Image: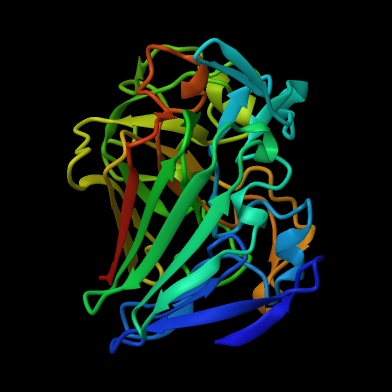
Length: 351
């Protein structure tokens, strides 16, 4: 454990280290239960950091931080117009995001879970558990919510992120682990040549505000088809309205065979030069695949790397975006006596 810097309250943030016998190291900050770095071996066994992030806590608190490695909530992804209705009551939220000039609520608001200091309640060499109590009314959400997140680094080169939550009155929740990956181990380089496969045969078309329109669309015959392993750059500049709206890939894919009681395969990412492979599994019904379209080179991260456009990709397992406003989507409501559970497993290898 080492000091990671101070937050505005004057409290110190700490950086905690997990490791395994294969040379993998994960660093987790108690600010936002954030994965700051993860080293993984390439085909020659050389370990490099493959997660985007910063060298100290201060940039994580800035408005410009695009949620590098954070646990975001209460409700990750976007909520239309910054409001939702639950049990007949409308709840206004911060409209803190404006894609194409359209206001929406993003990743929990102005100071969501990613901007809060979490309490470390257990730690070993390979695992850390953090806890956060979100009070009723925080960022406009109803109910007191108790949330626990555990990171585990296994001997099999797996990083597991598990989140649970309970509430004392009805609320909505969609916790997301928001790491940006660049499997090359070359910070600041492009992810255009990464090869991606998504186990999803439908996606959610959106309006100009990147809010789902409510229906599922087949990926077949479109640039959204990653059912076979495909180089990101192969079709990202295609003349296709969803790609124009988002400036690249920033959409929700619906898993073909979800496993709410287990773990379903979600994605495989391969970086050919290093040989690194990342396989992702989850119990959630969908995944947001994002190609760092809004990174613009203004952020300087670890090792002095400047993060330009498409220098990282996100594979965010989740419930459907805007589920709080769309009755046809899987429910995002958490009621007293229920337990929200989200498990996400990353398996790393090289070839």
